[in-house]
Image: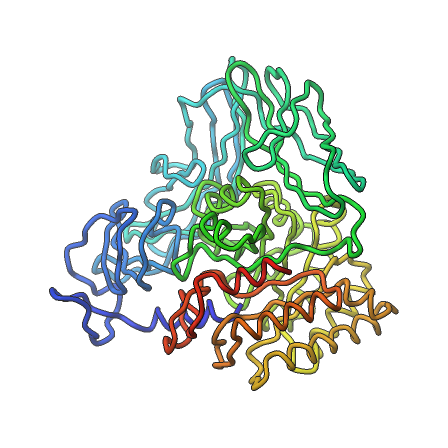
Length: 560
């Protein structure tokens, strides 16, 4: 999605100085030259662009005004904060620590080790995170995390730091389960599903430790309790989608949950996904998804973006750990209300996995880390720009990787999202479609982004672009109109686009109704963060730039 990169670049190019009575526009200054005394960063605090805070001994400069939340610590959200250099000249971060691994567990401890990072001046230590929370800083390449509960899974990441306070990207994550003891059981294994018109059957791998039985939840409501490793939920409506969480339990408590999403049969269009607008927790004053769900009835969100934290290691926005931060909190909220999530990889800009993972197998492995950590219903690959969309070596690497992802996760839908012209996919998009057919990649949905192409009639241009996609799919696969529509999606942009194209709530309703009438199976827009009114506000991160009701585009999307 292009707006994110353009607004982030705009924010990085503006420095507003804080003065006593309020904000005044100051001359641009190097972030590293900030000399004011910095207050400690704190959650639930309003920060203006240019504000300076300190966190773990490092000064940070605010790139974009926002109200902080737990999990938005400055090192975790580079879209909001940039490290200062403490008056020095070293701005180069260390390399990412390699091969983080567990070297042993006891009932109350987890031993970790990793490969050393390098730095242009010198590495001074390593930050160790448990579940996204900083545990300690050590000078060596190992740490023994003590005081842990028995039979419990813990997830760790590591970041290197240097004397100037520069932090590396996030290492690969590693999950280790403590042994023995009388604690709660370990997390159940992967859940598989089978369906009828009125039921969903679940089965899963057994948990470690002492297990009394298993409970199956839908949101916060318990649907089943069994002693074995399978359960069937009956009495469901035809063509209804449900997300379940399986937890093992004993007298000490419940394990971590394992999620699965399935749709009962009986659908006229069995591949249809719920309307799922994009939600980005690193940008644009992200709302609480629970508040949006209660106000609009939406039950699915596309969570953006998974990037590389260095090499073939996935992280939210390339910096935030997969678990334990604001992203996981949002996903937990969505699932607790019976919703599900799509996870988006890539986007217009950033350090992406496609160019960084050297083989299809490595790319699929990185995606699998995310699936294991998050439990999505859908994985969405935004293949854009010259580094992925127009680089055919990388395009093929991603496509071959998606074959492996689908083989290992048959219940997770695979979507590819890419740009378009007003008449349909350009040559790179046509090549992507034809190559997916040649390589036998089982893609569930091809979604186009019909905006930022100079439209004066966004409804008609969206219809024309979609018809062009339909024709390309028919040509590649030999499908009928209905078969092609059933593999298509639209991802629009609410309010004003980067090019000042205007999509009003009325136009978005027209586009939704056209998509429903043709049997399209995915409907999204960029982004919930912008689904707020600010007529005359321009193209900004936290509102649409037009007159509208709060969450109006999300309410329309929920009706898909």
